[in-house]
Image 1 (cartoon, helix red, strand yellow):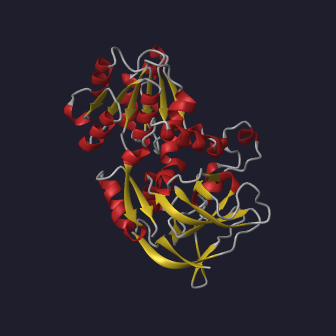
Image 2 (cartoon, rainbow, N blue to C red):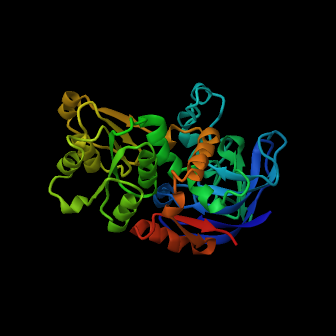
Image 3 (cartoon, rainbow, N blue to C red):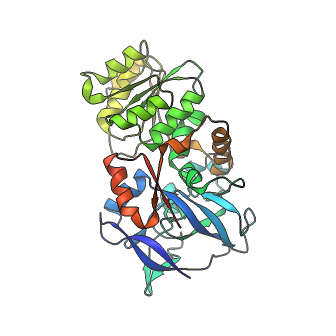
Length: 362
């Protein structure tokens, strides 16, 4: 079947909408007509270095099931669904509910550019187009997905609100609700107030925490305050960010989340924490250095987190429930763009002009 997809055709190149062919679903696959898809930092960073081109990214899709393979039992044509990351569903970690640490490997199922057997369901002019990004590649009018990353939505829930739940909101809110599990009246500092960071802010405010956002972009600090953060610190406006956070929290936050992946920010977060505080690392990065004695003498815990430790089939319905209660106002993060304007949306995200661009399909 012919469809349109946003291809990256050169390393670091733009998203260009092209006609592409997509296969019918295999027995374990689900064909979804995409209605909305969020743009995440992972999409933007991956296109800079992706080795297999042309490639279709996109991993926050939402839409309607068009067809299912013979082995699929959890959704049917006509169902409205949200797409998330893929897991095997059968290993020890998946069985224990920790699907984001699937023993099949997060890269093998989500970041290989192809199915595990090396094939791809996409082509153009008879040549392969790589995809299967997070088991979906939803920067396209249609995507092939799987039962493990396809979550049925309640009737009437808007696709544009559902799309970011599959990764960015799930990661930020899940880090608070599933990993840190802060006590009411405890203090939590969020370093980086993009889509993930502000999702963490919303979740922590809903848990009655004192939330401090550290963010250089003024408009994002304003959003954090509007969502209920007790303070928003401009790191460029203070001499010592860690000291400023400690001052606001009367000795340091009990918890901190780094969404940036930047070594200097990680070190600052550790320095800001109070004794026996916990730092959750969710930002993509390479290496970071920190003062070991600070970690030892303060008893700091450092925890890596993928996808908010969330099992999508359980956690995305919980996020929708929180939204219905007015405790997770995701719409305040979203700016909608037509799918044809994907490159403009990507530039707006990179510049900080918007928080969470969501592409919609007319």
